[in-house]
Length: 232
Image (cartoon, rainbow, N blue to C red; front, side, top):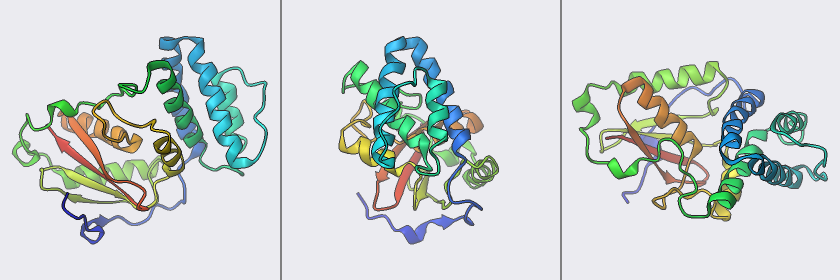
């Protein structure tokens, strides 16, 4: 892999907050988790609650409560502890990864939307599709900051594959990713590392361009992360 240069990235002005809005992220996660609960049944939420509480308990040094029985109660508890652990969505996402792996097994566990790497290289390059990546990236940043969902620091650059690379100097998911990575929980079906920001942005790119996008985490926890997006 060609050595990546941080100085090549165009950096946006920092967002006017340190961390994204915890309640917005937690509420959005719970909506998706409830859909998975319908798919897997009550065992899914039971395991997720257990793993999520164990994760956050280690961070705040408190014994996990034993009276949380559903996802709404779990979300309420996590949000009540933001003074001690300000990124409760990390706990939820870790619980989700851990539960998915237990229910489906290590191989092919993370069959999330956007995991379509098989098709890379079969489409035209971005410039041949008349996509203005600069406008799109600026809109991504503007909207995500307005919704308080964007990282404080964020940069981008065009890549040689006709797509775009994103630089996250201090990703707010890092605590979860470190733990999940150390346990082998965030491998995609093809063996590459899963990235929740990567998956989310690739879906946004699909919506605004009407083309499919793949993503790849090029650098992780260095302490920055770099994610590549390519259209196919």
